[in-house]
Image: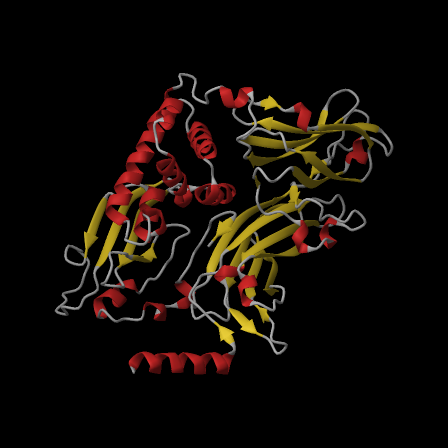
Length: 505
């Protein structure tokens, strides 16, 4: 009887609101490119990919379904705001609500002068019951122009834009880069086996100031293997071009036979004397385990010990080790790790571990790797639940991201707790870090976790003083009140203070 009553109530709510609402937090990936301008403001171009699975959706009058992600976007420097706007990014309309479980992309172009800026984005879902806000802060540099002259009294100015990656076959040549459809822009720098073409777009502005219009220049695009600094010339492009105010370039590179590895995608403009006028580059990752090359046959660690150690590990442990990198990985690494933990082959998983730890510390790769394995093992033993591996829990994530805390206190040993007679006090832990080095150097950082559900051993992160972490200054009031406190009643304006440069979840 009780079960039937609950079902009846749910049906009434859905009929009245036509909103399918949940508690998931908005998940979005941010890519940006700065396009400098010789005259007037440059342009900051934002590409925002939004995971439909993280949004609630609404049934429209035409019986289709749609989601909306709302972003508050602010651009400022130390003196003033240059841009502030609240923008609703709507998903396409779908006849089937299951189709919303995919990424959709939106864009925004913001005029900006030369200088350094903070780009602040606050994301939320108005249809969701979760009132929390996801925040990211990105450091932006809009290049300016050097007005000094050379001996010929010519302005020496040529500035590259950032590289924008494109989805194959979507770019319309007749349209400006800013007028393309959102699905043109690629948000991941990871190219799987099935990705056979790398498409990119970039601009160079101001070459005509040093080289009168029509002067001959050379455009060179290369892929450089990151570990060996080897130029993969067969995957590049060299052609002669003419100088002009804006050189807009779109390249398509066939990477079907590009071996697995980490690469720099590099675009150079060179004058007739061999001088490099401007350069821009972007990190690229490719998975192609069936392609054999000297890059794969040569161990990444010179003495071979790291490669031998990884070879001893089972495929499942490799998969778990790669997945456990998520808490500490950069935004550009997240997509690769997510793909590998789900679909990565044995060779891809092992190659990724070799590459990742070789880049982290070339001199002590094996030690850093073994320290990491130990950390993952401890996290698994302490913070895994029956349904979640350690890296997916809040305590496990913090442990893997920041390491072992200097001190841990609970509801009984907490030195700062009030005298509590309430036997229903919620179990909680306070972790103390005397110093942290990331994302920037910090001292005296705390993390407060609470066990909301007595039925499992999973603790939720309720408050931290760390940069980029959740912040709820009333957390002690919550845990010291009683075990049924509604944690979402805490100050919504003090919930999140994220500062990841490219990715927030």
